[in-house]
Image 1 (cartoon, rainbow, N blue to C red):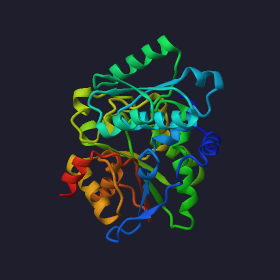
Image 2: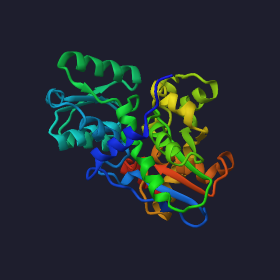
Image 3: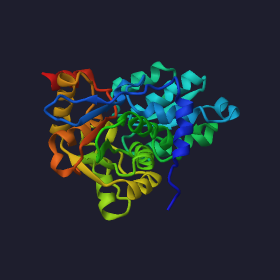
Length: 322
């Protein structure tokens, strides 16, 4: 089994992110759900947690590597984060996206000066195009999740949760959306090192539950792109959890549960109307689990639901609110 990301690596990433990312607060959800706190990563400059891993990785590259440029493949949020981070650091960037990526995300990527390359909506197509670009141009690849530098960057969320938990009663629970697994890996590595009694639970859409199946079977399970493509949660359409993230999940995560499409959209609605927070469907998955599947989660005096992103199509948000 590969070595897990250490607390020291996460703290190093936090130092590189100082002044770049927002230390997002723990926001109490309305009192109908006592003990539920929201960690709104939608407040990051790029609207999602992905900036943490992208900037931590690019800023750590050697100067000669940066000059050649970077490339990333993404369903949208990671690409936006790479484009933003590269622009801050003066690094050329290319982002490979599926042709189904929402325009709110691809427009943001282009606005930061990155070159967009569009491919078929499958992980295989994205990976193949990225490798071709690396071979042709010598770009440094910035992986979306299966990379310890990226995981360490995402783990800074766990550092912040542990710091802000203060004297809240134990036991604690942190609930996290799962796509390729980088986010939950980093958070789990930090939280379990600092608060070992706290449990970590992942959340996926029912229509893209490869990580749940992998967790239960003890091996990485792959879903077809035609299957994961059915979910409205475009940020969670990855077909297989990463190898390094899966090692973290097996060692540090208590369970992975699923939510329905309607539950994610209702969570988006309640976050907007009750907590005044904007979420995209995948970003609201952990909140949906806390609202609609509390009985499936471990008992806890305090629950933190990570709102992982808020880059929602305005038309979809209008329909949900309407």
